[in-house]
Image 1 (tube, rainbow, N blue to C red):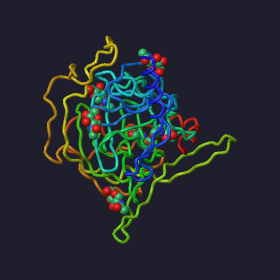
Image 2: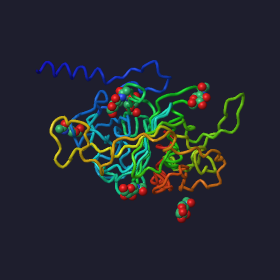
Image 3: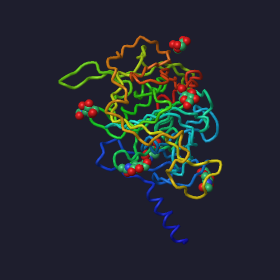
Image 4: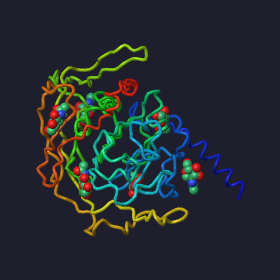
Length: 378
Ligand SMILES: *[C@@H]1O[C@H](CO)[C@@H](O)[C@H](O)[C@H]1NC(C)=O
Ligand SMILES: *[C@@H]1O[C@H](CO)[C@@H](O)[C@H](O)[C@H]1NC(C)=O
Ligand SMILES: *[C@@H]1O[C@H](CO)[C@@H](O)[C@H](O)[C@H]1NC(C)=O
Ligand SMILES: *[C@@H]1O[C@H](CO)[C@@H](O)[C@H](O)[C@H]1NC(C)=O
Ligand SMILES: *[C@@H]1O[C@H](CO)[C@@H](O)[C@H](O)[C@H]1NC(C)=O
Ligand SMILES: *[C@@H]1O[C@H](CO)[C@@H](O)[C@H](O)[C@H]1NC(C)=O
């Protein structure tokens, strides 16, 4: 027994160094070591531990994804460096998102990224009500990630892979996350997961169907332009883009003030890509009663605490559930740079609570205190 435990521990140590699969374009896969608090690889069905400090997210599907949130109740802006993983299923040694937390999700699979956009009572995962939230990514002030050692996997490309570029906006009852799973010579993974537009909000940075509170859907979608990219011309059949840089005034350690970025801030992304093959699910509950959790390794699935019955997944007709392209928003927006309202109106015609106000998931603290420079320019 002792020797097999030693062997397992030895194997785990070896596995923590991830080597890139050469079938992916350069810059797509995460390589090197996993954060020290992380298990060596994504694992479904790990024991429930609501005090876990693990920081490995997996984003596989509408009902199998994780978010970073604080280990104890506190603002995102105060805890970016040490957020921990919370998952919809017991996995990755992470904490479990309690059933009833997530109230709506739209999951998108595209050729270049997977994206999960949703709403919930995020106080259940330690984010205070009304918290302005913030933006998390693998870069961070010191280049070692926000949170430090945070890693992200998905199996959307056919098997579990560590992806190098991702971004998560979370706060104030809303979240959106993109994991960049592909690249070509036009779009690098870093550009498609560009992480320096943290004042712009989910709808701008990750266009999609945000009219999803109360529903759970999984769609395929066309590829958006990278955040802040606007086509300006076509040269020899290839689009040429302008890029938008968020305006920011900061103060350096020595006290001098600087300003970077564009004077005018566009109102929205250039377009919201079409989605198709949407499948809706009645619930993403895991059915686990955290007040009386199973001991040991739980059995996953079942979801006996279904959020109000309903049938299983239903396939909607093609291109029925998603947002239609809106096209044509000019990059030369007339909004002032200080307009944080970012109301990228969903172009979808579907009914329901049209929550068009896209929460300025502002790292307001950075604007107020001028301490955000390191985070913005990582
Ligand atoms: C884990 O995250 C750290 C910090 O961002 C990064 O340096 C490392 O390459 C990541 N490892 C993997 C396997 O993705
Ligand atoms: C839960 O996670 C914490 C922090 O990583 C760790 O100290 C503790 O031992 C874990 N508990 C169990 C039962 O694994
Ligand atoms: C990805 O993980 C899910 C569990 O979330 C599993 O059902 C599915 O079969 C996996 N897909 C692949 C391609 O491994
Ligand atoms: C890269 O992929 C995008 C999205 O599919 C496509 O529009 C673009 O033409 C591709 N670039 C090249 C060089 O193939
Ligand atoms: C989402 O819906 C829930 C009710 O299910 C509601 O309490 C919450 O305020 C809604 N969130 C937003 C951002 O509208
Ligand atoms: C945002 O919108 C609200 C309500 O529409 C308005 O009162 C406020 O002045 C706007 N803020 C900015 C910065 O434009």
